[in-house]
Image (cartoon, rainbow over all chains, first blue to last red; front, side):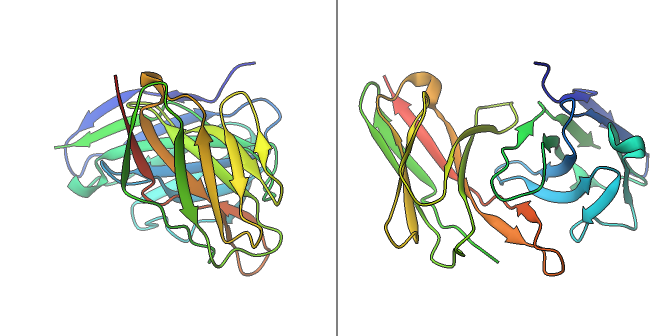
Length: 115
Length: 114
């Protein structure tokens, strides 16, 4: 079974530039999550989708971050414009559903460096 | 919010058992307790989860206290490949819909000595 695919693996940009990350979840998984993980910290949820609808985006900095999941399958996360503090690993995860019993499956992440 | 408390780090010797504790005193009756681990430069991976009874799988065992306010992840024989950050997580309830929003803390960094 294919896992969660993310690209690119690494990205280096200068501040105020824009960047986009792509995620393809496991086939059939209705729930998709984007997490931000700053070095030395646990992952922080940015946004959770159920199919193509947003379940929670309370921690997404909406002035600069946006995410979409068209057709309820793959998803993109965009940052525009990037700030130095956005340097982090961006993790995508998926699960069959959104109940408390569901297991999450994570991709390898995109490591973003903002200079 | 259901919150968890874990030690920042723990150490073990190779081939010895490891008991990783987690406190979750505000757990609700329907919350499952999940454990994930994150190896260096990788995304977190699922380890085990349970509701009330102790659980076993090929990776680990999960011992859940009778009052469910704490749990312990047990690695029966630690190997160097088990060196990772271990996260104990519960549902963070979305007020309007009760959806399961997995919230990670800082986890426990497990160091395994040869």
